[in-house]
Length: 161
Image (tube, rainbow, N blue to C red; front, side):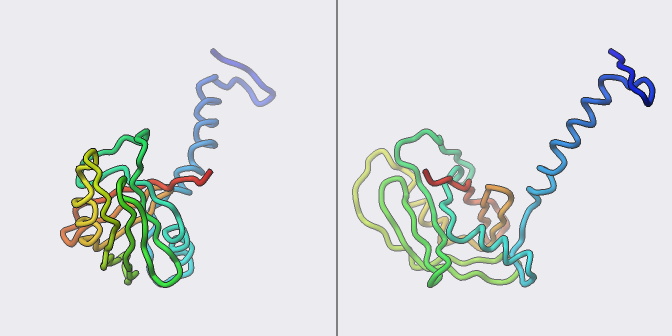
């Protein structure tokens, strides 16, 4: 279809293209990957990493159902370099250390010892947390990689109700 305006004839498809660029370009720009380093923009991304409740959506390639009753999550606390969360069965806490070039270490994971037969990934979750070496935050997604650069944990930011 072709519509005319005071500037001349403009195909309808051009209006759609202009609209798509105007809507999606700002979204793409705002969702660029953030690496934490020493400059000021990285400090802002650091605030996004810390004090956000991160919901586990992938563990060593295994995807998790977001509708499950017990959700595994992680909170990286800004104060005292503490990490805590829930495995889907047990609560846990530990320490973390942010290093340069998007490096992070998580250690000293301790958890409650409630038995949950339906949770078969808890040990693997805690083990993977202790193997974390690098992270990246992109939009609402947090990814942890091991020393070999393999993606081992993936989270999405969870909005508090």
